[in-house]
Image (cartoon, rainbow, N blue to C red; front, top):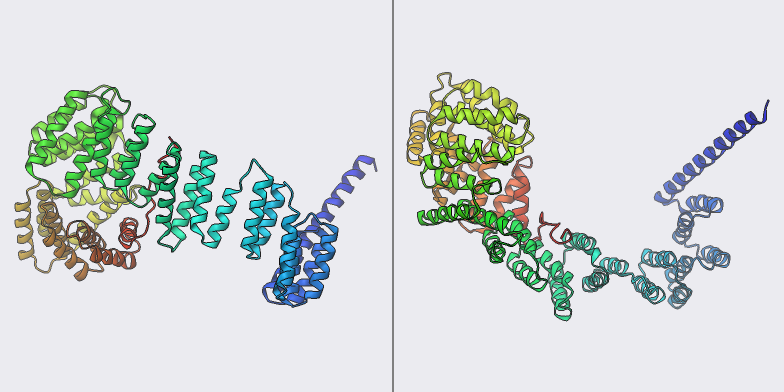
Length: 618
C-alpha cells in the first residue's frame, strides 16, 4: 500500500470525523435551544456550557448565563463570569453580563461599577466598541450604549458613529436626536443620502408618532438657516416634502437650489414629472415654466416645452372641467410650440396630443387625421412612437365612423408588434371594433387571447368585454339587446352622448329584465362623468355597487364612485369609506393598489412616492 493512498485514506477519515463532530454539535445546539424554549433551563444550561467549553462561542456562553439567571443561580453566574473576565479581560461584553447579574438582584451600584469599568477599558478598536454597545443594547442599557459610542468618537477621529447613534435613538424613540445624527452624518459625507433616505422612510412608515415629520422638517430648516451653502439639507427637505405630498414647498426649495447653484433646471424637470405623476398639474406647470424661462439655449428647454403642454393637457382632460375657450387656447399653444420647435422626432408626443385634442374635443377630425398621417413620414421617429400614432389614427377614423380605415391601422400595429403592449392594445381595439359592429363571435375569440396579456389593464378590459359578449349571447340568441348596447357604446366613444343615452333608454325599456341592466347603468355613469354631471354619475355608480355587488362591475363602480366623491364632490370622509369598502370587499380588484394609496392619503398617512431617485442620481 503506497504512501499516496495512505494519505488519501487519512484525509478521508479526518473529513468524516470533522463532519460527524460538526453534525453532533449542530444537534446539541438544537437540543439546547429546544430546552431553552420549553423553559427547561437546567437542562439547557448543561448543554450550552458543554458547547461553550468545546467552541468558546460567545453565543453559547450568553445563553448559558441567561439560563443561570432564569434559574436564579446568581452565585454560579457570578463565579463563571469572574473566571471568564480573568481569562479574557479585553472582552468587555463580559462586564456587561457581569453587571447585569448584579442588576437583576437589585445591586444597582455594583452593576453600574461593572458597566463603567467596561467603558473605562475601551480602546480604539471599532469592532470592540460595536460589540460593547450591542451588548448594552441587548440588556436595554441604552445610556451606557450611548456612552460607549461617544467614547468611540473621542478615540477614533476618523469615525463618528453617527449611524449607530441614530439607530440607538430610533430604538429609544428619541426621534429628534436620531434626526440630528443623520444630519451630522450627511454634513460629514453627502454620499450617505440614499442610506439616510431609506432609513427615514422606514421610520416614517413604522412610527406612530405624528410629530416625527414635523421634527424632521424643523431640524432641516434650522440646518439650512445655519449652513445655507450645504445644499444636501435642502435636497433632503425637498425629498421630505415630496413624501408628504407637499409639492408647493418642494417647488419653492427646488427653485432656490437651482438658483443658488446656477444649475440647468434638471431638478425642476424631475420634480415636475413627479408632480405630474401625482396629478399635481399646477405644480408641474410652474416647474416647467421656470425651466422654459431659462431660454431656448437651455439644455432642458425642449423637454420642458413638450412636458409643459402635456401637463396642461392632462390638467384639462383629467379634471373634465374646461371651457371651449380653454381647449382652443391649448390648441393654439400646441401649434405655436410646434412652429417654434418643428415637427420632428423629438416633438412627436406633442403632435399626437394635439391630434387627440383636435379630434375628440374640437371636432376637427379631418385636421387631426391629416396631422397624424404626416407625422408618419417624419424621419427618425422611434418604431414605438409610430405604433402609438397609428393607434391614435385608428381611434380618429373610428371617431369619424370609418371602420375600415380604423381596422387597417390597428391591424398594422398588431402585425408589427404582436407581443408588445402596443400590439396587445391594437389587438384589443380591433376586437372592440368588431364588437361595435356586431361581429361578436370573432371579437370574443380575440378577447380570449388577450385575457393573458401582461398588461393588467388590457387583460381586465378584455375579460370584461368578453364576459359581456358570452353572458348575453347565451341568453339572447337574437343578439338584439347586445347589438343595441354595442351601438350605444360606440356612440359614446364618438362623443355622441345624446344618441348614446337615447339608445340605452330604449334598450332598458324594451329589455327590462335583461342581464345587461348593470352594464347599461355603468355606461350611462361613464357618459355622465365625461359630461361633468358628477352627481348623476355617482348615483348610478352607487346603484351598481349596492344592487349588483356580486357582479363583475361592482369594484369598478365603487372605485369610480370613490374617485368622483373625493375629487369632484369633495367629500373626503365619504370617499375614504368607499376606498376602504373596496379594499375589504374586493381584495382581488385591479383597483386595490391605487385605492390603498388614496385611502392612506385621506387618512393622513405619508405615502411612498415613486420619485425615490430624485436627488441622489443627480
